[in-house]
Length: 264
Image (cartoon, rainbow, N blue to C red; front, side):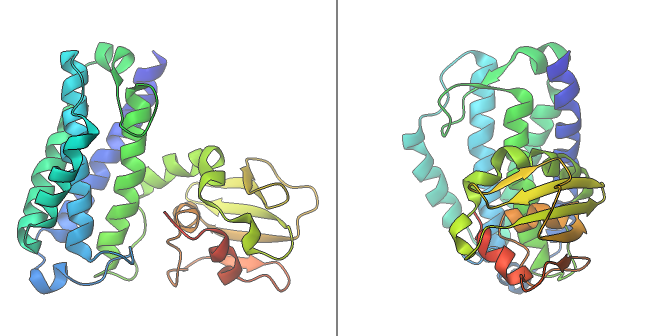
């Protein structure tokens, strides 16, 4: 069944992302937990709090879908966020570990029939979504915020490879929502070549910002980078963490590209 085949690798990548982040933060003290993260607005503990509150809300929606009942209304979310905001750094870390484990384990526990037929309501979408889509949203959030949390103490951190392999192929569908095509004075088309996994794209700002899985005929330049770095670039998280990123495009710089993708 299509949904089962699509759900399995996404749930597996979510588990790998969870386990990596838990291992990275389990022994952090208050000083380390309050260091700046890769997200400019939050320290590391606040990133964990964001992930933890999201896991709590997500689990509520999953449990409601399995029970055939209405999900918790959006009006209840601010009280959840306020409770997490009030936690001390170590308390926030420990609560994140517990709630995220519950959510990931609940996805893993879904049998094939449920993975194929269950529809889950997300508060920011107009209709219920299937399991691969819902877990995919969570994977994107978890992978990027895992990097946010880990890079605060490890400047060489990268996105988890299982997540990057899935997320890079989804970029063409979402890139236009997060980009600023007017950030560059002139429209460009770049050939984008990734490694781990290898992919070829055409990145264009000619008509909005698009990323197509094709080789451009006459590009204005070429950018070569890891797939995980491309995901971070689009999410506004490349910054100074550019190992393996190479751009050959005349006067265009990596800083110019980063302005196209301010982040979300």
